[in-house]
Length: 173
Length: 179
Image (cartoon, rainbow over the protein chains, first blue to last red):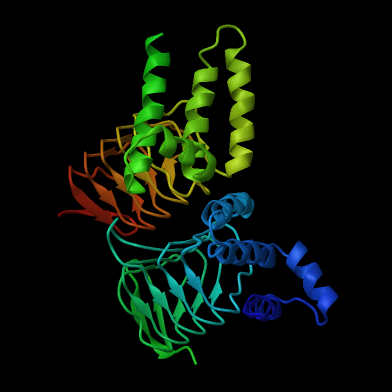
C-alpha cells in the first residue's frame, strides 16, 4: 500500500503523534495533513477507470477550502511539510521530491502558458511568499528565502533570496 | 438595461478566456465543466452575479452587499464592487486576491496573492489597468498608476509608477523595461 505508506511519512513530518489513532486524528484535524490527504486521495482517484477523472476533479474542488491549490497533476514525494497551509499554489507539471517544506503563500508554477514547471529535489525548504517559476531545478537541501522570485536553477545546499533570487554565500547544510 | 447586458456579455467573455486557457473552445459542455470544477471561474462568475444582483431595483443594494460578503468568505478573495472590470477576467487560483476601486480592461490575468488598490490611507486613488495585462503571483499595484495594454507585472513586484504598453515590470519597487 504505497498510499498509506506515503501518508504515514506525511503524518510524521507534519508533527502527528505516534500510534495509528493519533495519526488518523491528525489527518482529520491538522490543516496541513487534511490538505495533503485530500490531494493524495484525489490524485489516486485519477487511475480509476471511467469515472476516475471527474471524481478526482470533484474531490479536488471540494478540498480547496484550505486555500491551497495543489494541482492533481503535480508529482509530490512523501513527507511534504506545510506548517501553515494557506495560499499555496502548486502547478500541474511540478515535481517535488521527498521531505520538502513549503510555507504559506508559496507559488510553484510556469512562466508562460506553454512553459515548463520547476523540479524541486529532496529536502528543500521554501519560505513564505516565495515564487518559483519556469523550468528550473532547485537542488537537494537548498533554501529559498521569503518573498523571493526564483527564475534560475539553485545548486544543491545553497541559499537563494531576493527579487529576482540570487545565491547567497554560505551553505544550508 | 445596458449595464445588465454588459455584465452578461462579460460572463460569456470570462468563460471564453478560461476555456481557451484550458485548451478547449467554449461550448455548453466546457461551460458546465468550468461552472462545476473551476474555482477560478466560479469566483469570477460569483463577482459578476453579485454585480447583477445590485441591478435589482429597491432590494438590489443590500442584497448584493450580503452576497458579496458571502463570496469573500467562500473564496478568501475580494473584488470591490466599485471596481470596473472588462470581460474575459482570468483568475485561475482565487486565493488572497484583493482588488480595490480600479478600472481594469479586457482579458486581464490576475494570479493569487495579488493586491490592486490605493497607496495611501488618506487619498483613495484607483489604478487603471489596460487590456491583456498579466499580473504575476504576489504583485501589488498601488496608487494612481496606469498600466498599458499587454504589459506584464512580474511575481512579487510592487508597482508604484506607470508601466508603458507591452513592457515588463519587475522588482520592488518595480522598474519597467520594454520587451
